[in-house]
Image (cartoon, rainbow, N blue to C red):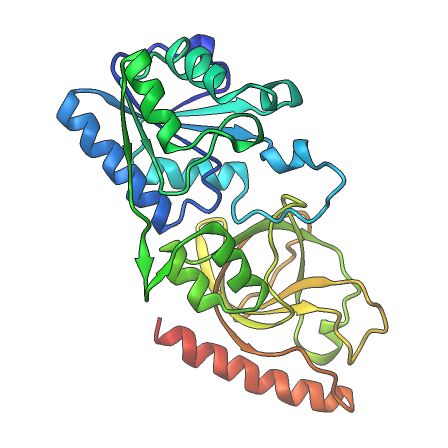
Length: 310
């Protein structure tokens, strides 16, 4: 996959294009990408995804502070490449760009710069200033500027349309299995191991404390999770706690920590990747450290049994 951050370098004959944020690159997005590739083969064109960085909401609503992304930019690149996209344009989203009308976006960017031959969009596609452009507008513009446009129906699973919003809601509720079902892969968190308070060592459950690589990355709900931990090229079973550790800490600040089963070593400042499989229980406060330790032993066995079946 070829990546462009400057469209002046984009020179592709017969590009078949789709546009959007593609946060999560979930099954609904993959439906669009599959159609993109089919049309490319039929028309002897090449598949192109046109996306944005930073996410538009970070520019349009900088003080909002509530945006949580399913994928970082690097994760998105990796997922789109695995999906077989040939060209990825990462267009700089600025306030100036956000003021383009839908006509200007199509005329000046898609037609003038990319010279599109076909545009493929999802069922809820909106574009241009204030998201005023829709599929009817695109149909009218396609006849003016001589390109084909195709809209795909919503992807349904269990009679529910798959969307980034629904996946975010599932993660914020701790429903990892539903989120993974809609994503089509296991939700992952990339980060760096940072120094913690070393409280886990006192009860023979040392943990790696994690700082997410992107502050806007969504973090699942508080609770205890069965996860896989990826370090270098190795994969380990792990039990992760997201929360405030109420039994052994009075702090209200959220921590993200993972006990890596059958691992010993110093991980400080090392990159780490967490693959979420299932939430096993809520975070809770125990009456004593011994009660906590007893529960962690049970959690460890639960996690090992669960991951043995995955």
